Image 1 (cartoon, rainbow, N blue to C red):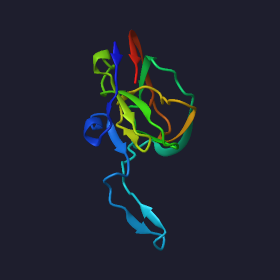
Image 2: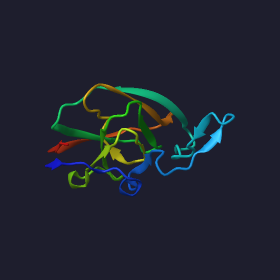
Image 3: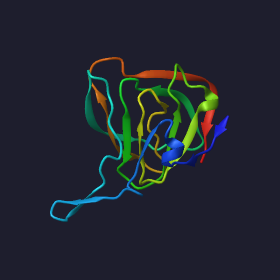
Image 4: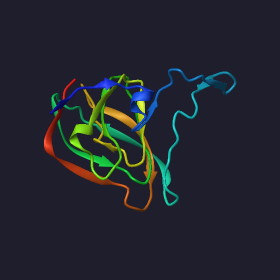
Amino acid sequence: MIIRPEPLTKSTFLPFGDVLETEGVVPHTINFGNTQKFGKLAEVTHDDDGFAQISMYHSTAIELPFRIQLMECHPLGSQAFYPLHQRPFPIVVARAGDAPKVADIRLFLSNGRQGVNLHPGAWHHYQLTLGQDSDYLVIDRGGDGENYREHRLSEEVWIDI
């Protein structure tokens, strides 16, 4: 099976999480007029035992086509990825549930100025990047508890853009 990307919009991505982008958001001017704040693009969610943490991920560029061999999810909290570059990157997801079904895996392509905030339990591939190694700002739940599940795919799934 080969999956191809679909447009990354707030409505198409809603079953999996939030699109983090400033397009269409009215900013508030702060800091004596020197800053435009695009507030509340998404909410960081986690259970009562966790805390919000901010990380930076450095991802090695992939070559296409690329085989999707596993999906992961974080059942106790959301996880946001925002590019620290302005190049398109792929986002592979499936709805929350016991295990992702191959037929339900979807591929989105960020325009490089969009990030995503994955809902708790939404299945996703680890962060992928195209063209050159890239950095991403990541905000998610830290703390105790089983907040990582992994599912290895038995069928071959490839992405191509």
